[in-house]
Length: 126
Image (tube, rainbow, N blue to C red; front, top):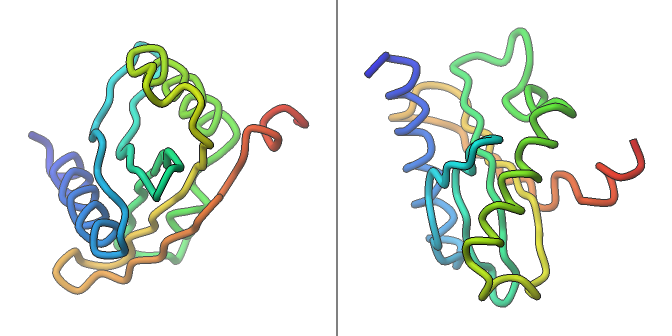
């Protein structure tokens, strides 16, 4: 596996451990759909949380969260629809889109959890 892919998977595992420590429950990781992939799907009480994990060793050019553009958000929404179609149990659950930004080397990373980083309404209004 390429080094950047290994780094990404490790950042996702780090984010999953962090969020689990905050009380969320892991439902799925790396859910693949033709339109995209969901890094983490978690439950926060009775809310389904779709988590995009972004990792950068440096923020000189952009922070991890700034790398999620409109196109990426759209792919996340489409992949979420796919997940819910496959997992109808969550069909009526409230939905939230979070971002976990991992900055620096993974053994001493700074983790920033951005709850409700974007909404379906944000996507509809653009």
